[in-house]
Image (cartoon, rainbow, N blue to C red):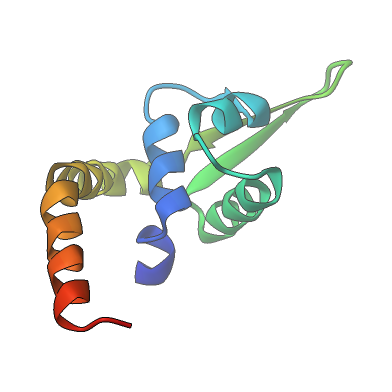
Length: 106
């Protein structure tokens, strides 16, 4: 479970869904750089783990929305904290990477 929760697209999908349910296309537009295949895999894995709920509406055209489950809502504060930490620490981590790469060239 830690591997799934720590995945980039899982974290970003949870953050995207924190305020309201969304359709696939809306999620994809919110997540810059995610491919259709990767988002599909992420949503399926999250649904399997019980982190999101998939609602299919009997309408034409078919409408499907994804929402965070109650289980995911208990995890959301930690996910937001992880995302914030990663964003706040990015410059330091990149500087550390450059210093390491200078010390140990490939």
